Image: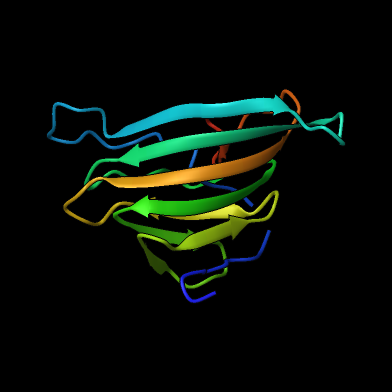
Length: 141
């Protein structure tokens, strides 16, 4: 697809789900994550399905992290700098997609723009597992 960008190596995400962030000079939270949908996987009893809406204010970024499950993301608005370990840095824009296989190292997730970035993330995660863990292992999210 013209707007589809797929990054494939080891996982993690939208998403973009481990967002320990630097302080920003704004009143709004730098990142807002809303769970839109959650359920048991209908065919895999050890998996859960999530849909998350992630809003990143300008300048917001995540620390490097790993997702135990696979993540498929859609940039609904704005721009997103996105990089998995061993891959080129990508600058995704509205309408672009990305994929993170389970266990990949998500090195960059950042809004370099001047407008809010909105991402819709579809996640298939091991049941009961955190959605993301910082690569340094300091905390679970």
